[in-house]
Length: 261
Image 1: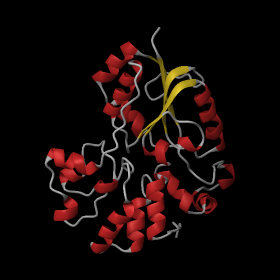
Image 2: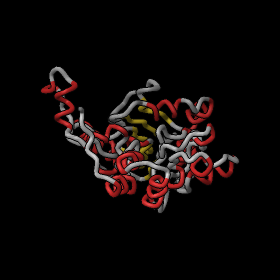
Image 3: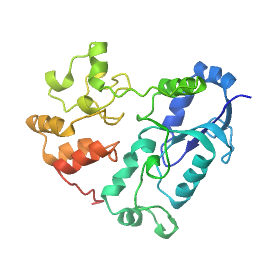
């Protein structure tokens, strides 16, 4: 009997599920190795299925999602979060820095029908997570590699090195040093293949903080480049704003409150 696999969606843009599908032929090979019992983006739907591996995309932002993730945890031998939303709240977690009720009232014509939590939080804030695959979106090769490791009864290999190492391997000229651009590469874990620095742009920290990132040191460098306190804080309070290292750094430089003005 083949191992059973599910891909679940919570509050997110579906980008990580699409990254999964973009694996192309490798996904077809995977289908011969596992039984895909739930993956609504790809057609299979069985929310309550008991599985060996459950991949979860998205953050928890509604009472219904709070209950659903607990049931998924109960039905899964291994639970792996994929993407920035699932691992660190995602861009929607910026609401944690604001008055959520105020935003809802200003956006929706009938806010009384909106049943959401006051915060958007990562999956690990609600249930035990076995492994986390970061990224916005997640790297499909990392997802497939994690599956291969688990099918071989081994723990997935999670890389914690900085994006700077990836740039050096590719021979990229450092945009922080040569172009004086505020690049987040020194504090960000690798995974995207240095997409932005490879085209001359600074890293946006899509893959979250690397191991022992030291954000204050990078923030001080940004100050030398002319960024003010709020601009520096926003660099850290972005896609992965609920990652502890980035959240602490954002607060360190300036506790900002996002308003709807």
